[in-house]
Image (cartoon, rainbow, N blue to C red; front, side, top):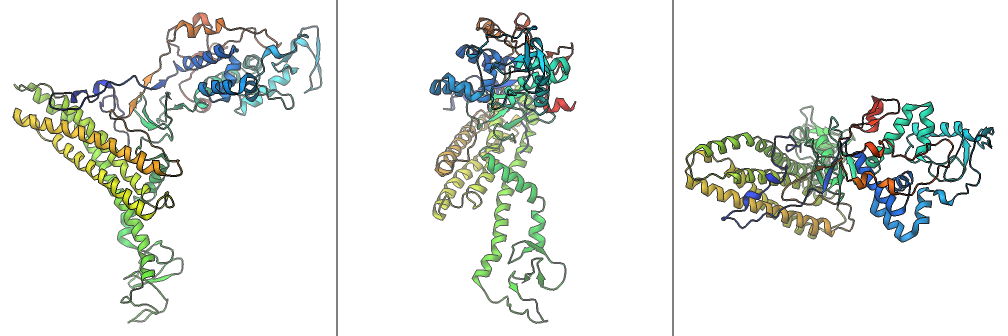
Length: 591
């Protein structure tokens, strides 16, 4: 189903003001519980650096590390701070560092610092160079700057800039990002910018709790969730999507079910009606066969001949009066079952597809009711009437959209839940029949009440008397509550009795929310002074590399002196230009 709640001027699925608060009234027992703040955040180009720095600050403070060491740990643990801390508590600091390729300076022998008067033999190019033209990494390995630079260039061009390892044989230490940036920028400033961008965007690319919005054209936003990865979110651009699979919001279908259903609809829905009318299934291979002549003996491309009248398999020889080895008057159960199987599968698909499409079409048509409803409300408010509050109309319309959406996606779910494609060995025939009857009863109740709600909302209540409007009002309020409860029960049935009872727990669905898909709030790019200046209080190690800058500043950021709460738009290049972070790296590279 397309996204009909995504534009800025549509109110259903929007914010707390357009919830069901209007259902709190004397005539209804429905009480809306005030919601907490949104648990999903939008990371824009302005807030990307702030979001990354917050996680870096936590690790830096907890483990007393420099920024590039903290970044190496976070990239290794896919920016999962809690998982990183859990590994630290369970296995210790030493294991944590070794696993991620972090080598702290305090563990090194730095009795022989590199100076311009000293000479170093590079083990890569086998040449003697002065100390100021060589660089020693935290792991202790030292090579000439030219070899380091070429190594970094190859890794950055190969897309490995987030974890560039030391050149030494069997050394897993990650190179200092400040050294990489300093050496590469001298020969290739554009690659240094690319390196900075990759480090910055690793917060999105490597973070399982943060993903780019899949909007086309790309809106430049990323979404960060706080809780379950299996959820549906709405970006500020209006797109609603499944956080797990990036497709349109599709609960109560699981991601796998929706993927199979989308492919099946794309492949079959356009031709299914024509196939049903003009073809019959081959009794051998079950492929649809079209009759192109007057004779009732037809042949499939697999070589099987069969009777067009009854679909039974036959021989190839025939006369005016009979077909060899065949008589339509003779009933053979095995052949009849094979013949009917393809037709049964096709009719089953058509049953679920037609109902899915019917509710999808209804959703589209009802989405156009907004202007009509607003006109009715406007006319009613201008009348001399004792009724002034018409919030129940908007609330009912919102509930209609939400329930219709759930009802529409319940049919693809039922197609796979009670079919043989995914769960053939998970349930016996008796269990499948019982569970199917239970689900279809709930589906039927929801469908009945959704249609009633739609009928009452389409009433021309602006022409009715106050008493008649009050009756419609009560019906809409009651039906809104009923459909909400029925949706909740359907989800409980799916999660507990259907999917929850499966042995293979590979099918998860986004939880049902009465207020609809949560609209993510923008993550502020203005953090407290503690966040902006946290690195000032951290212990700093001496610079052990001859090619590195003295201070280990955050990549792609400004100094702490000019990183206040003003809006940060772009990261400045060393050459004076700007680096636009509005698009993912692969899109920017093409530009």
